[in-house]
Length: 150
Image 1 (cartoon, rainbow, N blue to C red):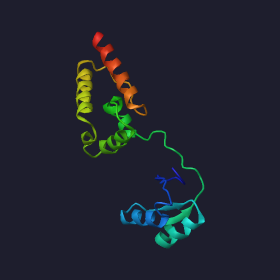
Image 2: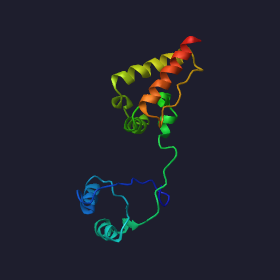
Image 3: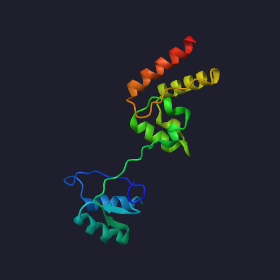
Image 4: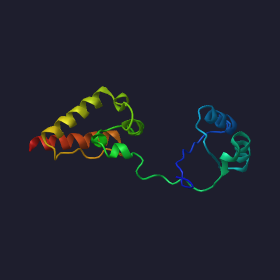
């Protein structure tokens, strides 16, 4: 969050990609509804390109603590995923096909989790959000094994 709005902060190597080209790409892909420049030179370029939609700020961007909101509210919160998969699944849960972002092994594990929950509605997987995938997978294996022993 910055100035009350959601933002995406883009880090780039100006030796490989100029701010002007980055800005043009954002405009071409309709991703520049507002441009927040970090330097006076960037601000000048942004104002020339997007006019009043450009501003300058040196404030740090506040990280939303609940960045995977939909995922955290779903049964998939315990499914081990990479950070990129979790972000894609989170974005797809509300309106899209989240299964496209998972491997066949993850889909089979998700089905196993659903079957376990159907047999024992009190069982839930430990949250995997923010955990390294290998650690989350081990935690889930332990939880499933312990639940089977009951």
